[in-house]
Image (cartoon, rainbow, N blue to C red; front, side, top):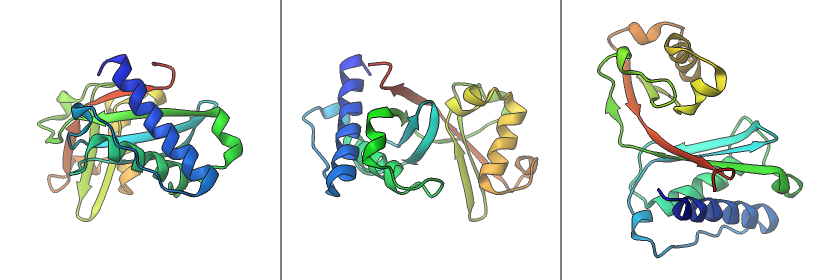
Length: 181
């Protein structure tokens, strides 16, 4: 995506959050850009002073990108179970990061994991966990630590990814934030 496209998506996310937090109204704006009408997975991460404040997303979706971004932005602000709903007083310090996901594929081998490039999904029975490509970079993890973190996120024992019944998938993401535009 070019800088203008990234800026527009960040503005859509911010406007939807601000409208919902200030007035309680759910407002999903449309866009004329055909490239934003494609169905794509997306995560919206919110931070305040560099600390996580919410992160919600769709790994895959049938809805257009522009709609997914706004829905995930609102959900990150209000429905991330790790945090209370975002308050209006926090809006001025809010940084928004958007991760637009590639299609998900089965991971051929852990040797194919590239720190900072590969996002991972682990599925075991009804349990499913996901970590975005930027997570191991932010945490200073190597591949083994990334897999351990994914086990923890999925609520499974460390090392369970070695079990042949556990499925690993990967994706890439185009990641951009308020500081990029």
